[in-house]
Image (cartoon, rainbow, N blue to C red; front, side, top):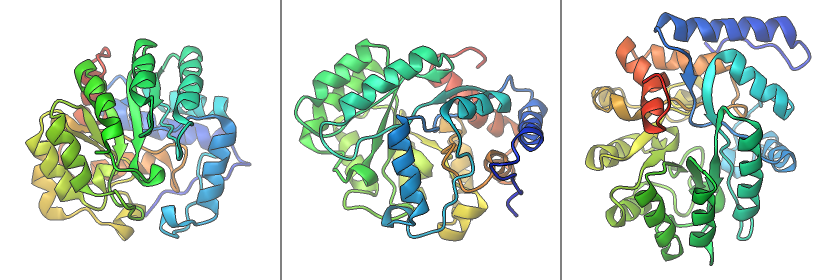
Length: 309
């Protein structure tokens, strides 16, 4: 059962109670807080277009009703993550056409300057000049990149991206990549295109978003084969996703075995349930407190060189 959440008009006491519950979760584990590698901050007009798309039940949502739980202004969203005890988060933003990535990177650099607990996030697209602007973002301090194969409708193994992948592999900068075929398949989603990228760049630190949903086991296999591949938990194991693309119980031992390379992700603010539900969904896998400590904090702290791991 997904916990109830207050509507946008209630605010105050309900959000405080929610924050207290989230804090109790990580305090019970003896953690200093949470690390969330999959949260969305982007220019307001872009984010509002994303919300409009979710509201319209378009093909990229699989036509599923998808209410946005945390529809609020930027400052309020960042404040709520801090109230939850999230020590570091990201600004996952992504282009859907050429000529957009560099502009988004400029916005994200400014956001990182005024939001010190946000890991400086950048993005990319297969287009002429991509290697140059990726290099510029790295030199400007980018800590993580976002690639969205489904929305961008591109092949991650496109030769135009080859130099950029090589640069990021050499720099050791993680890339959170939405490459699974959920919630709806795209022309280039699935494990095969990503496998071609990794064959060329085996040291590339890919973080497969949503556990590779629904091709969970294929992406677990890639992580078992390549030591720098990780997976984030975004929306996986929740009641919402289990109805659409259930995680196979037979794969739980593999999930446990990769415990040092599974990272907490939430998709905040664009989730159709309370933030706490993602944490409870991880807890009910019954893989143990040590596994939860790694997933919810230590693994990301180690990956990004942050204190407390």
